[in-house]
Image (cartoon, rainbow, N blue to C red; front, side, top):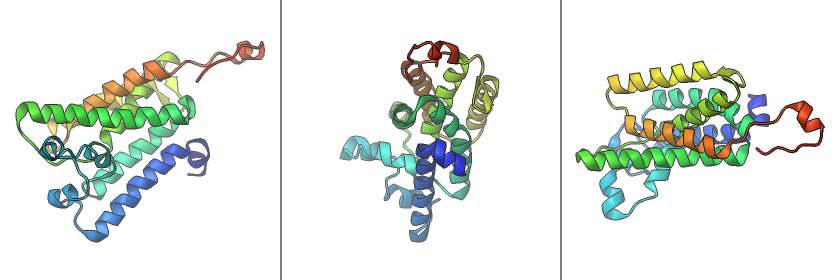
Length: 208
């Protein structure tokens, strides 16, 4: 955990905030209860469109339905997030994480509005899928590898995660897909591959 904090402070802070929010809410009620979560910032389309509570697109990213939901998201996030943060830099990493989470929620909201089936939703998975999407692009640019993970491993994780989502109940697949696609596109926009050490030593500069 020491290396994660030193090399990827944003990942550590985001994970810590998610955990703290969960335990604070756990002392006040049941985090598996939709009504309780709704009263504390979970996403519900009628409240957003009719009441103008757009903040829910953001606050819902820090809420989780139960301890298992929290741990599943945070384990994947910490394992993969720090690789992206170290490679791409803190500011770009934060842009990818939060923009992907918001885009995933917007896509989810659009899907609910199209079907007319409104549910209470929450979780960091849209943002996490955004991190995965950006990682996939960075791995492609770096000949199939980034940090401790490979492009094939990331692609396999995406396929398995999406398959699990579509074959299970209670999973916001549109948020996952929206986060994944936006993360990949943001990776394309924000990531520039580092030049080799030999070229840098010759006086060339590079951007991150």
